[in-house]
Every structure is written in C-alpha cells, then in structure tokens.
Image (cartoon, rainbow, N blue to C red; front, side, top):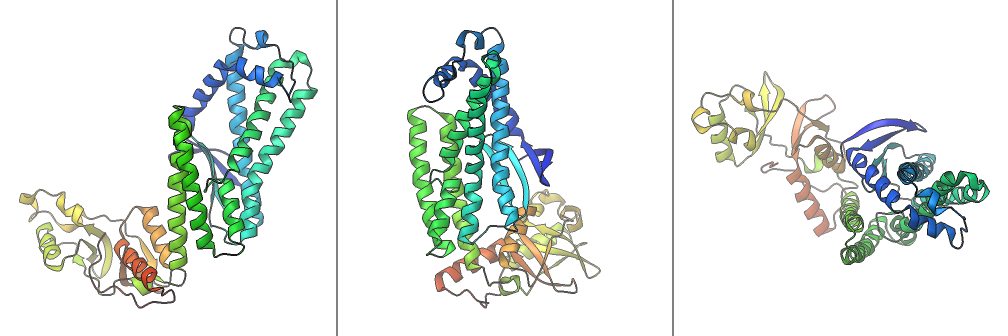
Length: 389
C-alpha cells in the first residue's frame, strides 16, 4: 500500500494509505445523509438519547456531524489497532506501523506469535479497546446536557459503531480478530500450522457467506471485506505451512552451487547465446572478480535484435545486487526476494564472498520436495541445475 506517516504513538508510526483519503469523505457523506436514521436509533432502547432530530438535520449541521463522526470512527480504529500493538509489544513483538486504509486499520507485526496464549491476548486486545470506547461514548451520551445535542449525537454514533466494530471483528473470519482467537484456541492441542489451516478454512467459508450477503444487498463494502478475508486467509495459511516446512532449512541447503556468471563487457548477443545453450535465464554480472549486477532474460529481450552485438551486458543489467548469508533460513530468502521485488539472491559466506545463488524456483522446488517427503531437517537439496527467476 502507498502510505505516508502522520504521527506516532508508543513509538509506533501511524500511517495513512491513499485509499483512506478516498473513503473518509465517503463515510462523512454517508453519515451526514443518514443523520435522521441514526437519531432514530439513538432515541430508541437502550440509548434513550432524546436527541432533537430537527435541530441535527437543519442546514449544514448534518454535514459537520458527518465529518466529526467519521473522524471519530477512524480514531477509534487507530485505538483498536493500538490495543493489539501494545499487547504484542509486551510479549516482545515489535510493531512496524499502524496503517489506516479503505477497509479500516492494519497493525504490522514484525513477527508472528506461535504461542497460543500470546496470540489469544493480542487478538482480543483490539475488541476490548473498542468495547471500552463504546462504554465511554455511551457514558458521555448520557451525562452531557441536551444543549450539546450535536456532541451527544457524535458520542452516540461512536458508541454504536465501536460496539459493532468489536462484535464484527470477533466473528470467526480469519485473519480477523475472531479468526485469530479461533486459531489460538485450536493451537492449544494442535500444531500451529494445523490450527492455521483449520482457521483459514473457516475464514474462507465465512468470507463466502459474507460475499453472498454483500451481493444480495448490493453492498460493495461487504464484498470488499469478504474478498480481503478470503485472500488473507489463503495467504497466511500458505505462509504458515511454508514456515513449518522451512523451519530447519538454510539457504545453503537449497542454493545453486555451480553458479554461471557473465562478464560485464560481454555483448547482449553473447548473453542470449549462453542463455540458449545453458538454459539459464539469469546471471550475476562480474567485473574484476566482483559481482556488479544481475542480468535476466527480460533485460536482454528489451534490446532490439539488430543492436544486441553493439550493446553490452553492463548497459542493460540491474546494478542492484541483493545478497543473503548461506546460513540464513530459507524463509528469510523468500522474504528478501518479495521485499526487493527480485527473483534471485546472491548467496555469500561469512567473508562476503559469493558461494552460490538462490532463486524463487529453488525455494518452490525445495518446498514441494520437503512437503512431499516429510523431510524437515537439513535436507540435501542443493541446486545443481538452472536458477530461474
């Protein structure tokens, strides 16, 4: 997500995604157009607010109320995510950031707790904060004088929405809070990976049901949330399985040792011939015995065929070379590839010298083999073939 920082709390950066800037005015508009509906709800049981409908919908008042309520709602979302974050930090899990986006808020943990009790308390902390905010807002609605009906309306709306936010998040839609609570409880007597798989399947079913409700009611927000839950459940389940498979697998176990390199001053035509002969689609580029770049088939293909004899590899290569230590875990290699948007990494020893190459293909091949055979401790999967992107 494209986001920018707007502040921090407890040392955690607070960011706004660009999609949040689109949804905030939409929420303000929707609340403003439905002030009379909210007033009717707040004047009923159990709130019995006694709000003056005519005064709150007069002129531009409704639009001011819409803006104030929308800002208050998303402030509550930030506090909800801070609840998760503070508890996570108490358990020793740093928080990279909290980001507000079109579907709410996301607290980005730097690592995933695998102790069921830690996951449980981190997951319930957000809804507990939302319930507390709902109670405080309800109290403010009751004690403020009728002369402050505009303020009372905002607090009443926030009471309703924070209670609803807590209830919705506790539904078993993994990776929502309720789904994480379910995984934590399942992990008491199961492996973390198996608990994740079960919670993910429940989350997918929940997402499908939510999507159907959204389609029948023509509710785009529910459809978007259903899609987010389904994709999130699938991706987290897959990552958890990969973490379990690669738990004791190092980069050295799966890397390609016999690394084919190309000289920086070779022509693109020569590079294409080598790719055809050796069936390789990516090479580290060398100059004076050092790696100075990476070149792939896509880089070479961008050169017009009639110019390939005149253009050198160094003219088309990427000079951003990303490396990883041979003793690093295989999942660290996959994370690094995703972070940098590359298909391969140079593997280096303790002295910083290149000892191999690891690609996404190497990782996926090793994953398939280990998962099929059940081998999980230091398998002999060292690459001897091509290293594709």
